[in-house]
Image 1 (cartoon, rainbow, N blue to C red):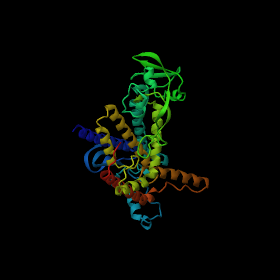
Image 2 (image 1 turned 60 degrees about the vertical axis):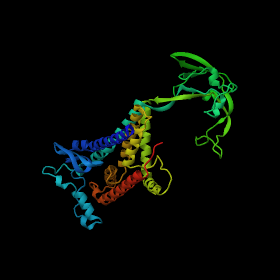
Image 3 (image 1 turned 180 degrees about the vertical axis):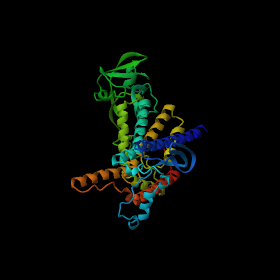
Image 4 (image 1 turned 90 degrees about the vertical axis):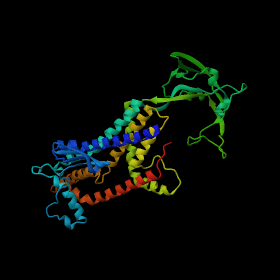
Length: 439
């Protein structure tokens, strides 16, 4: 029962976190739009029927029944057709005309100079970048809080367990006989809880491997400084060489055709180090978040192929890749699994939820920066195109061509909307039929 409640709690955390992220994304558009004088009639989280609404000033704020996104309404998103140009004579003219007239019902007397398209191109870019930028800040903040405030598990130089004899180095379940050779660690007198602080007089960091220099010189005596019960002491250890299991090139245990571990000569000491949460510096956390954002941008390029592989995987017995595409349903499933894990501590749950929400916000940033309408990146690209076109005309001594007529891309926006909708529905089906199971 407790695991079920924790699973539901994980889902609620993601749904609430996503709603807040979307709301702040829309505030990222709304705030600069209002600063630049554009009228914003509507701010909403979700789509469909209103569950709650309140009008503050000239903007109505609402929560909608379908929590799959959000939006704000900016009057005059697209410019009117240029003089002498008739949209009805264009291909997809009805779509272009509908884009120009969108939200015209919100236009009131006094709004003649408060339309979005009337802003300078740089202001339009600022307004449209405000949303993704908010997700970027949220993503980096959440990842930094997780990595610097809580920390991720790393191997630390604290002794967790002593391997008592050489036989246990080959088979951890083996029992040591009186005649079995003791390991160097047992002979040296190591105890669980010892914190290794120096090797042969050289200080080492808490997460630095203390045995690289030691095992590189087997059968030689080495002095390891440890902290035990708050006191510093020196232990003398001489690593031995024996035929032991080893890892293959992929990092897995090397085995023969029957699955039995392969052995080779290796230097060893015979102790296991502990793992603990180690907070990163803010600089390292921000760097890790930035790398995640960059990787997400790269993943966006592979998204169509990922969707295809996920859908085709429904008809095979192969397990889903944990690095593949997921829908919002899949994300909530992962959150549920993370929180329902009975062995997870509160710190574990906080860390994983923050990383999940941080990754989600970085994905929203990357996704919205795709330079195609109706995404924010498409509007940003329109502003950049306008600057480039006006600059080229100026260099060529031609008359100013005016603002870019981004309404002409309305058919592309409609096509993109359909593609994204079908891709989203397809991934929801994949996540329901073949849910991703975390290891």
